Image 1 (cartoon, helix red, strand yellow):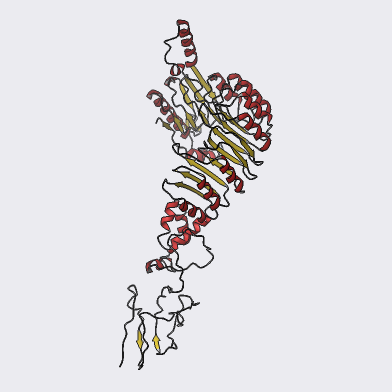
Image 2: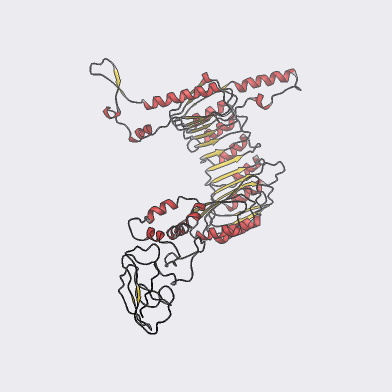
Length: 588
């Protein structure tokens, strides 16, 4: 008797590609389950067999040595998917395990549409195009893309391994295991910027130290409401174990208590919100930049003189120093000058109310090659500015003197006239209206009231005239004592006039054709309108800078295009003129 068995055909198989299985006449036919036990490529049994033939290899009907001879014919129009019995260890769709991309990855169960997408054919998406698309996604986007299909998962895996910089925000309820597995996947990570939305402790620090062995740049940031519980001993252990660490920036360091930092590779260190440190030991011979921002609380008691003395002895290569503290004094400046840091180029001592003109003289005698000097919040006067101009005319390019009440408009004008390399100047809250600070004088006598009024008039009615060829940024925020302002700065692109309430619109003249933004928040409408009209006129004049030439009869002058002019012109200037944008007046 003849038995005809119907084959098991996948739904996506076309009608023209049908594999037929016909059994022969046999008295004793062996029992057979659905499917085939033989390889569809070479015909050998599948159990324990790994086929070496490519998927596109054409197979011919073969006879298998079984109890019953079975004839198998397969279609060659499209290769069948690889057998799922070849690999027992199936990979997850989203995996953070480290894998060697050079090895063949195990197959997973996916539908035929995804096979067609990443198989050879006209509809294949180029790997380079997919790489450029996926590498622009944030970390959560890459995690979601890995769930799409095998090709996307392999591309995201390569992206994680090739990533050198990662900016990560940790939500409050995120488990530490997830963060560690994510960081371990980035084997080539060298720069990490971590923003935590929950309290930061030593567990996160240990997780980073274990997951990122080759870390070079580390940045911690958090909001003001959160607490950084990392202690000085834990921070010192982290720095000592990371032998490749070059830059460390951390916010909210109020619980350090004291620290000892020893590193031969560390070159930049930023610590903020420091509070009542009992000891600060720096053993970093290659440290070039340090920024220490102390708390503004009144009971802050850190010994800054000992700190500066230690920096001078253990960090001889320092180039940039920034210290912000209410405990800065003239004695601290003397300790800094005694350190004899020959490579010092940038010095910032902020909120030192005891820093005076004598401190400026000490700085000028010891460090004559400064490129940036920031003495904001100090008590220096116009005499101190004169010393600065006498010592640094050939090096100083950035001068910041905000919150210095003893400076007048004459000192600012003298600085801009004597410093030809100046590109940035900040004089915020220097020329202030005393009525805004002392609005009432009820308990004062008549004589004191008259003297206060005369002093008020002397400070309010001040004018500022600046003419500079290289100045690019000027900040006069909070200078409510200014009455008139005249600027002739062709390279100026940013001007800050926030809260300049007493500036008269008729006494403001801005001859700055390169202005891109003017900050005028807190100014009255007439002033902002006058500024808007002047910057618009400057833009029109800049666009119409074409040479004039007389006609042949000499009757009148006409404007000639640049390409017809006999005078040579610079291609860079032409390009800048074409790309010039209108100036923005920001009032919010």
